[in-house]
Length: 275
Image 1 (tube, one colour):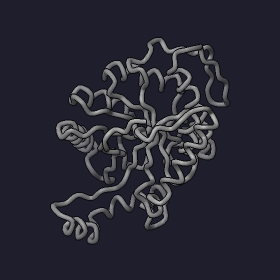
Image 2: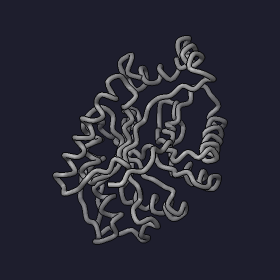
Image 3: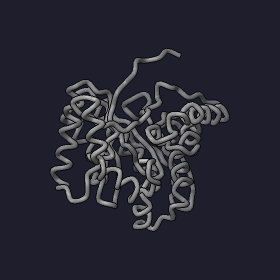
């Protein structure tokens, strides 16, 4: 299979320390995407969160729609849409609309939802989130094929002869599944031969796990008669930028990233050193 050159993008959660002006923060996020487009970056992924105060974009689709009007070539994706929080028919409908509005510059990122506090407020058992994500993804993939009406019955959504009223503008809307360090994300992606957002690649042990994880996705895809494509694999790592390496290391050592580390440890509950 032919390989494309390396592409560059940004995974914009976004992180904003509690106490920052949220209106100005969103303005800054939008300006950042405009600059990324100007500088020739390939992609930007915008997250969905509903609690904890750090990530104030609740609907990445709205943010993407606004960013499309201010950019020319960068592709924009949800990083990620938390599928257990939405009826899959509406997710598919919204992204088909964005696909038309963007003429192929929209991508769908999928995940089970990172914050238990989000699920708690919506009355969702966090232990059900991964199962729900797989069920929703099955429905979305089937709907986007626009072949036969889709009927599904689960304990949280029903589809009765579901059919999208528009076919996608693109031949295939890019879909990527978030993966950390467990097999779940890779298996969900392999189930449909989808792309992957390896958001755990930057934590200790993450790089060493990548080849094993990709093997899990390939094995799962083979079970369903599909194949994975490395061109659709995004690897997310943390970066701290300064004028030079020495200054970057100095800033990190004196705690320039302390607030973000606090988020990972105190809000997401990761052990120290895994931020």
